[in-house]
Image (cartoon, rainbow, N blue to C red; front, side):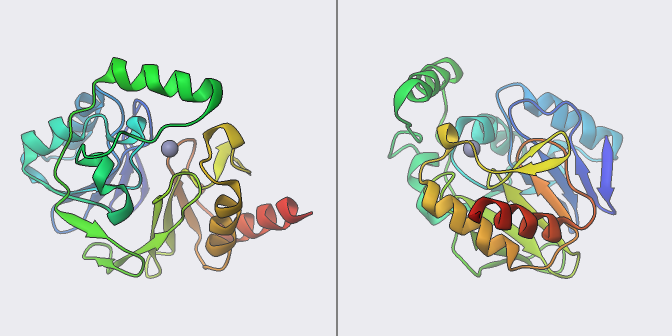
Length: 229
Ligand SMILES: [Zn+2]
C-alpha cells in the first residue's frame, strides 16, 4: 500500500471510497468503504504489523453508503470508537434513513442501500466544527456541508494536510467541481470549497480519486476561482 506521508497510508484497491490508515497512538481509520473492504483494510494493517484490534478510532466524514458500509464489521472486530459529525449521526445510528437524493440518482442510491444492507452503528464521539481529534498533533474538524448535510473535513495544520471527503472531485490528478447529481446543496458545496481554499495545506486526501501530494491548497484556490467565473 502507498505511504502518502509518514504515518498515513491509503488502503490498496479500497472498495467504494478511499480508506486511510493513520498510525499515531494506535490506528485511526478515515472512512470504511463498501462491504468487503474490511479485507483490504486488514490486509494493509497486517503488512504494517498491526491487527484489527489495534484500530482505536474510526472517523466517518459523512453518511453515504460507500463510506460507512463496513463500519459495523470494523467496529465489532476492533472495538474502536466511532467519530462522526453530529449532523450525520442519526443516519449512522439508524434513526434516519441514509441520505436520499432525487431523480435517477435517488433511485440508484435507494437500490444501493437495499443491496448493501446497512447495519446501524453507535457513534461514540459526535463531532462539531472546531473540535480537535487527538491524532497528528490535533486533527481539526471543519464542516464542509453541501455534498451532504453534515459532510466533514479534517485539517492538520502541523502536517499541512486535509482529509477533504467528497467536497472536491479529483479526476486524472486534477481537481474538479462537485457533480450536481451527487451534491445535496450546490450553494453550500461551493461555500465549502471557499472555506477549504482559505486554509493552507500541501496535501489533500480526498474521499475518491488520487491524493494530491503537493501544492494542494493553491489548486483548491484555482478551482474556486474558476468556479466563480
Ligand atoms: Zn459521498
